[in-house]
Image (cartoon, rainbow, N blue to C red):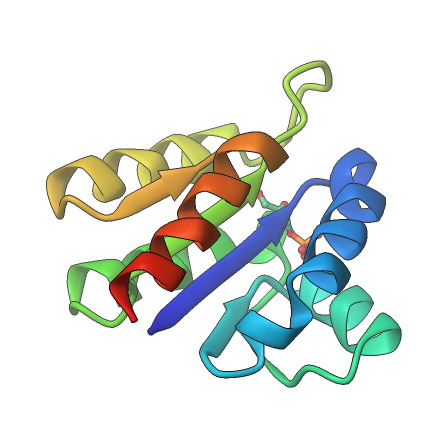
Length: 123
Ligand SMILES: O=C(CO)COP(=O)(O)O
C-alpha cells in the first residue's frame, strides 16, 4: 500500500511515537510524507520515506496530486486543531480530495490505529 503520513508541528512527536509503534507493519509499505514529517520519521526509525515538500511550501498539494493520480491508498494526517496554519487552504484541498477519491483518512492517532489494524485484516 502507498501510505501518506503527515503531521503538524505540535503533532510530530505523536507521529514519531505512532510510527515507532507500528514500524514492523509500516516497513512493508511505501511511505509518502510531507518534508519535515518524513525527516523526523527517518531520524527516529529505520523506515524510508518518500518526502514531498514541506506542508507550507506545497507538500500537502503534492500529496493531493498523488491522490488524484490514484497513487495514495491511505492517509494518516495528525492535524493540530488548536493552531492556525498559514497553508490552511492547502490542507482543506487535501482533505477534500480524500473524499473526492474515497481515500481512507485518519486525522488523529486513534483513528490512525484503526486504519493500521485494517491493513492487518486485509492481509
Ligand atoms: O504542514 C504540514 C501539513 O499541513 C506538514 O508539513 P511538514 O511535515 O513539512 O511539517
